[in-house]
Image (tube, rainbow, N blue to C red; front, side, top):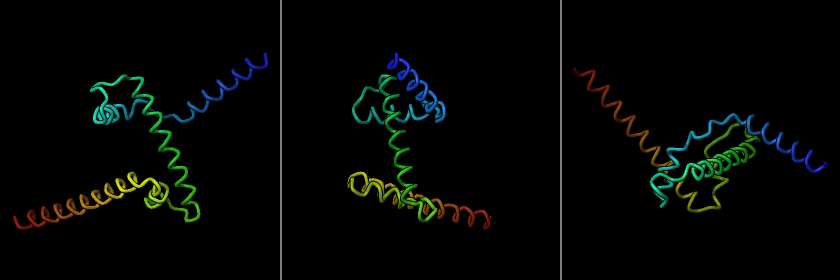
Amino acid sequence: MHNSSTAKSKAGSSQTSESSLKRKRGFFQKDLQHMMYGFGDDQIPLSETVSLVEDIVVEYITDLVHKAQDVASTRGKLLTEDFLYLIRKDYPKFHRCTELLSMNEELKQARKAFEVDEEKLATTE
């Protein structure tokens, strides 16, 4: 009897924690399907596999954000550097993140230059 009541209480608590997350399942499904295909899976992977990968990814990101918040707590402000600090030990991941951040900055500068050119063109007409 004791084991069954314990199992029921654990099941109830896990349902409560899942409902409290209020995460929209399947939000990343299409993106993950494309990524999985790019890494060698079928073009249309099993939905159960995609769901499992999504759960793992969301758990990883959630954990990373919580750790970054802990790192940033003394400053009171969460910065990109807090995430880089946490992943610095995993060089390939760190290198890829810094590369993507650099590319993002270049894109921002290019868009900004394009907007300035558009404004000059509009004022000369």
